Length: 130
Image (tube, rainbow, N blue to C red; front, side):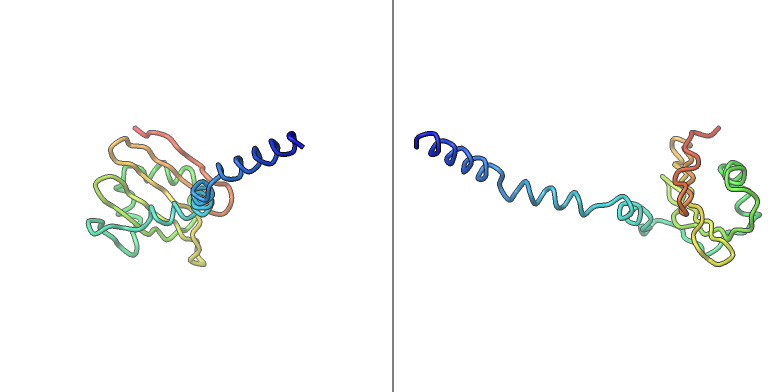
C-alpha cells in the first residue's frame, strides 16, 4: 500500500511539473516553420527600393549576376527585385509561366551569395564572392 502511494504521489508531481507553459512553448516552436521564416524575410521595409522587373542590362551590372547565371543557366527568366536595401538584395527568377524558379539573397556587407532552387533542390550556392 505504501509503495502505491509513493508511486501515485511521484506520478502526480511529474504531471504537475510539466506545466502548460512548456507545452505552449513547444506548440509555438512547431508553428514556426522555415517556409514562414523565409516569407517574413522577403517582406520589404519602407527603405527598400522595389522594382517590378529588372532588365538583363541592369542585372548584368550587379556584382552577383555572373555567378547567378553560371549556377542557374542561361534560361529565359524574368528577374524581379524583391528587396534592395543597405544590408541585402533579394532577387526572384521567374520562369516563362511566371512561377518562382530561383531566389538569390546577396548580403552586401559580407559579399555572401545564396542561390535557392525553389522547385526542390534547395540551396544551390552559398559562398562569399570576390
